[in-house]
Length: 336
Picture 1 (cartoon, rainbow, N blue to C red):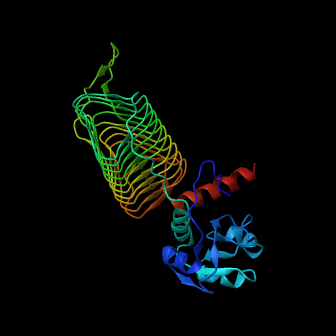
Picture 2: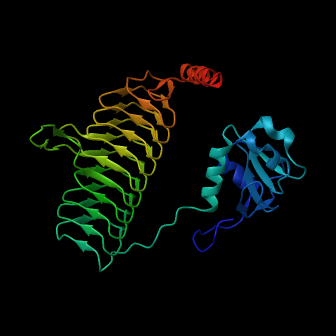
């Protein structure tokens, strides 16, 4: 159950309304009222839950939920009395239903007297700027955006409409699109790690590029995206970046990519559209990871990856090859 101190719930909804929100097919009377969402093992008759992973089949068989979103292949395991919504993507359908009960809260717009805003900064209508935020000269913020406490927007940064900048984030040398969410402590546009190595003392290469972030991008807490050295660092529309991710200078991240916690993308590497980098994956510099490729957790990628290919291990290999190698090593070690 969501704590009402932190999460505000909307009114009860009929199953007829919920199936329209979720998509799919309702296998019951649509008049039943549902008051909330909950996990299978906690749900009561007035709640809706979901099953997307067969690992939790027993929880589904024993759930007290009044309704559940499932795939068609699981309907024979449903407990008696549980209304069913059949979906091709139960997790997505549940997400849409949960959003309907717990929509993102929009605070009344205000600009704190304790924010520090340059005289020539442009702040759109309906924006909120919290206490301690610093908005420097030439910044432009689109309508209905949010700037959290102690966030810093350096000179000439632009922020699109309906974009949310979390507390203590710092942004420089960057243009950010619409409907983005930058979480607390993110660092965007800092100097890239570019220098000439010299025994007499390393020589810094001026980082003269920017960070260009598309629309509907999420960047997790304490993640870092360096600006380019000359070319820009680019994050494509709809890409989601988890907490504690490092993206080096000149990297180009395509549309709809997913980069999970503690992953690192080295400079001048390109991720084409819809690439997934799992947790702690590392990608060397000047590589291309093809469209739709997936990099497994803790993998070290040292060469280009073909479109649609799944790789795993360090150094990474096509996943079937990597698993065969792992099995062979395990078998060899068991003989000693």
